[in-house]
Image 1 (cartoon, rainbow over the protein chains, first blue to last red):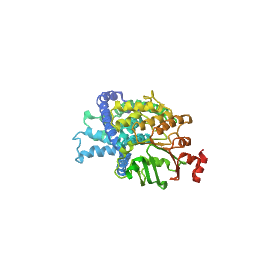
Image 2: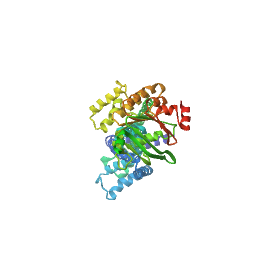
Image 3: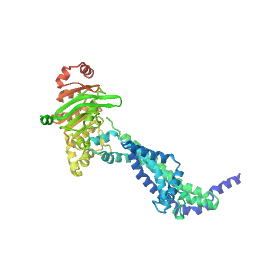
Image 4: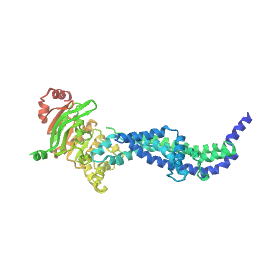
Length: 242
Length: 249
């Protein structure tokens, strides 16, 4: 009984290994994970906005193409997309980022995220009262002006909580970049832990990585939930009462 | 001959037809609105009166027929819809104020974006309109903090700020609590008496009788009867109008 517990402790919670890996996790892994997440999110938001506009376009062909993009990237396993884009682009001679594995990694995650974010933006924009857009048009504003002055400012408010929720998923999603073989200084939290666990033939470094991920994601999850609830109350208070 | 005819007529509908899928909402509707006149359109719901109004600024596009505003065929291919819409103001049943903006921003927005006025001038003009509808002091309130009647008055100010030639009112008081209707109707009445050309879809028969230069009764997508309000309400000619008035009066 005691031996069993000891074995579990050694496999997952070896204090020496955990203490040994933590400095690297925090000084190298954490900044890289956050940097990758931020870059991927920026790519995701920028592309997602464009795709969302396309999903709501009046031209059927544009809608169809954007819908296809979203379905494709949301339908594939992320690990497959990271491989295909991150490894595939340079292999196919499309070395848009030169030899920077880091850039391909961020780009592949960003592409995946853009599909999810497009859906978030689409839902947010569609939630804006159609009549307000009509009112803007009757005042002589163009479709584009109505988009920029009515839909976007109101839509952004609606999408901030789900977008932040998506950012939490991006943080976890960046773990997949270990597939692409990063240099020592480019490694994210998971890559460092994985390398360490292979070298020591012990999983404790992965436990440490897990705790670090949780320290990032759990507080953010609760913050988003509280934020979303507050927005909900705010929008109910603002409901039109005839 | 044509030229003199067009200058007296602000809006002219020429054999307008419109369907939503299998539903034929407007069948061959022709009418004209003399400049400076208020025409009230009455009729049961689903009669096509709102659709006719929405065709006037091409929120709906008629499938057949032509619409002229001040003699210009707005249904002709290649017409700049946005330029046309500046000439035609519209007020909706559910106000549709921009909910993220303050009262003055609601009124000033199109002055800035469409008329390209600098912000200060746009807001100065907006302030004049807001004072004119009796909401001085409310300039910086959020639109969602206003009562329905106040919101509708802001919506009227927002349309008037663009100095349109024609105003369209689509059941502007139908969504309001009874005690708030009067204030909105009073503004519409003042506007009519000031010489604005107005097309008013309404269920307010008293308003129609008092303010309209002409009343149009629509049913099943057609104009059934039209005439001066006294004649329409006191001596309806068609059985359908008689029946309708019995139901609503």
